[in-house]
Image 1 (cartoon, helix red, strand yellow):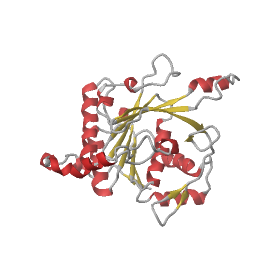
Image 2 (cartoon, helix red, strand yellow):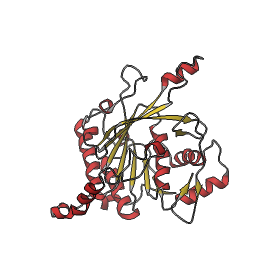
Image 3 (cartoon, one colour):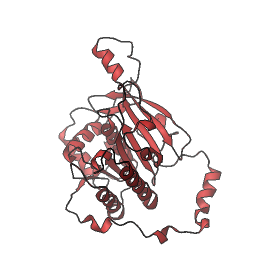
Image 4 (cartoon, helix red, strand yellow):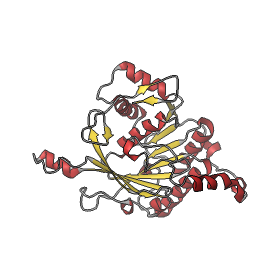
Length: 310
């Protein structure tokens, strides 16, 4: 695992590519169009950690995905598990979290990778060695300007070959909650960056709480400009089942069969499926599972290849 310190000169990456590079003859897309007709239902891109989703949802390079959720509903925790699964598929990931220090991020991801609350020192060391060349963390807490975040994305793409950039979160990017035009321009810039570089960009955002936290929010509940979700290729909403937790705290069992969380695919521009993915949460390992009976498994790191076994 490598950190990206703030003292790197990102000024060279503040400017995007020249526009003439994007003007190409229509025939350039012949092979891609032929493939779409010959294999219309074939899934492309990286999969999510849950096998039940592999045939219906993918994370494709060159797309902007918004991950909204209410505060405290596990967005950052879930995206860490997704990042581990991306690396297991050979993807290179950079996490720019302005809310968590890199050591705290890696502590949580170590638990998720080990499938337990207290992994031993050898596993922690092996995991960190395995992340070299696969995972980078942008070491900057507090607010960062939108221009700097875009520069980080370009640097990661050009110098490190990062294929998935995770930004946690929109409120930390120096834009006020009521700055709708600024939000629109920033999200448009992220979408353009993703499309131009073929780097997948993941932006975490907050959802409005509304009257309570008991109803899963949709894509229209994201705090801020409607353009945030309009400009995105995908919107995956994260919701924690507070109603189930409240019932269990009160000694009631009427909600025991309900899921602990929902990952709702609210928008899937280049996929055909939208809907809810039911998840169960294991507190010890801080991982989300696809059934109440499933047990978390440790990743078996294979240093010789880019493969990981679970």
